[in-house]
Picture 1 (cartoon, one colour):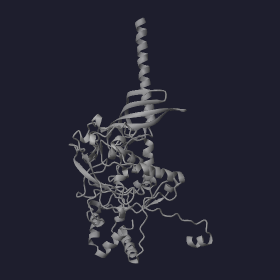
Picture 2 (cartoon, rainbow over the protein chains, first blue to last red; picture 1 turned 90 degrees about the horizontal axis):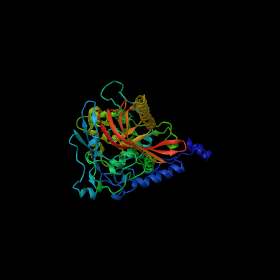
Picture 3 (cartoon, rainbow over the protein chains, first blue to last red; picture 1 turned 120 degrees about the horizontal axis):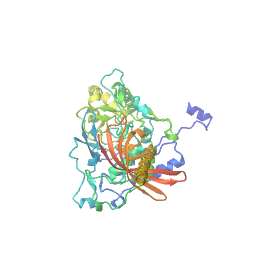
Picture 4 (cartoon, chains in turn red, green; picture 1 turned 135 degrees about the horizontal axis):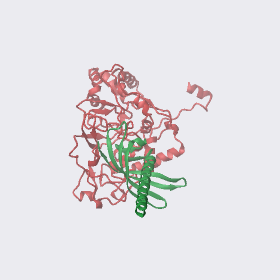
Length: 383
Length: 113
């Protein structure tokens, strides 16, 4: 229809070109595009000890872990986290013992003191591995209203049976949405915490170096004066991630692939994958046109679900060890390792290792004929 | 009579000092609402006064353009997961409209209940 009208009226029915992977959202202003580019530079900035790296750290830049196939994507790093579960309603993130992120690297000055990395705190009850998620489209996820997330709590199949999602809450009571346990409420909070916790770079919001399991770092191991970056730099990095477009949907040129993907989409519904991996949500009102009331194809309800004892690891805020936020499938085809800990090598393996509330879907998937399994996997290749 | 006057003066002075301290703490609490400190899981956004159960000023420095408080806080959110003891650095800058919070730095945080 649009094409027809376009033929008659060359001006007035334009569609925006879908951004390529790693590009900014389509309808940003010139100033917002400039913020995106400035933020990207800081995202790629490699920190050295003289700039504030460490003394303990996991990576020396944001892009070290978010790098494939383009900046903002995935990495092969797997982190170590640990907390103390005092169940059923109490989780201690062990801030006084260095916090839940256990840094795996040390600068030469710290190594000279005999410290190679942080240790699992003695009072931790469990540890976890965490792979790097891609951050494409996270600005749109950030712009989804809390009320939308909360509206999906409860029993989505309406029968009060196996599936029941609930929102995690941050320590200050906000609805969480980022992180594998949905323990972080906002993109700015995530980025503000990534500098000190992942790179050992202090900020005005976290002006003191992360401790080594609760012990302050030796004074002569941290040559850069605190804070090591400004709030403005964090805001620039946040602008980069906020304006990073979601991955373009894959459109198959081969008719057989298109047919299979279409069948797979129906199976995604039939197997009830879509009860938790809700295909889309809508952002709230925003002063940024590119984020204002937009559809986000995230394939998640952003809620916690019990995934069974086989996948259980740490608690975090109000999430129990077996509870995980429904993983966003947005950008799934760019991932190289699967599940929260990267331990599944294929999408198929990840599906087959779902447990707890997802066991119905898993069992139904396992019972499918190979042709149907391939159809579902083909559909997932489009996301 | 003279002793009585001195005693009364001291009581008034202590009262005024305590009132000023309370006012300063109340002002700080009020100014913190809307601010964020820390990051990721270790992050606190002050959403309302009732989240600040206690605020004690531990240190204060000031020059003509900048005022910095170090405060001890007891925090608890209605829908949060417990009580937290925090120490924070609250930095004000002087503007045409008066003193404004520039940023709040989280110095330490511990689950306390």
